[in-house]
Image (tube, rainbow, N blue to C red; front, top):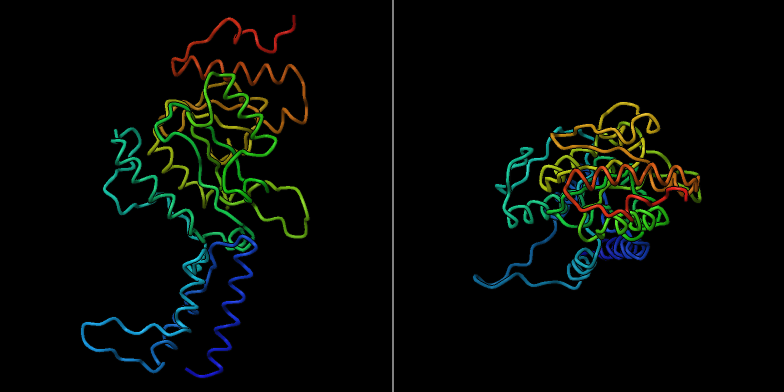
Length: 309
């Protein structure tokens, strides 16, 4: 291969290594760029090996393979496309309410996760994200909590609700007699909303972003089949119901989403901001309804939380 080609490849590898060091896992590439690379590769001199033996691996190709296989993957960068359903290659159906075996559910969830991890439907989010935040917990749980989108800490670690609001959510779940491992937690958006020009803070997902990403959540709900969904905050409700929601008016009132009882409640971050005992009690009353709906025992002590003495 020419010296110019080697120099260009070395520069590309260096760039990939820098991206990897910054936490980047996937690099979106335009389809025409991939096509151009394929044509260029086809025009290079081919080294033929003896029949029945593998083609020799050059130092150049080995370097490129090492970079791509060690944490950075090149994926096609497609324009944003909304699809109402996700078609999985496995035989597991996604029809709401259809019983699934644990093996089928595990396989389908794993496949769905793989697709979400390389999703490039929102170029602005792909360019800024460090991790796709798919979801965490028991895929056979009776209760599924749904938030709006990952924050900075979630984007850093790839797990939903691990910041201050997530720690409060964990306490709420534990007060219900459960744990993060026995419920399922996910978001409408699987990528952190980008914040151009900001050095800190988060922003609300746009309706188009939520509309583009919500099919992944639909598939999660249809596969996990929880007995109850808990929507955390007005943005989560807006993403689920596709219309503006006023959480102060609808929290504590049962809705139905994809055939499943849906309980809207305040987002944990709201409780952190207000620190009002009455708001904590309101959220807890919502959780008592959830516990009763799924048949969890409720003690007198639990019923008395956040009541003034």
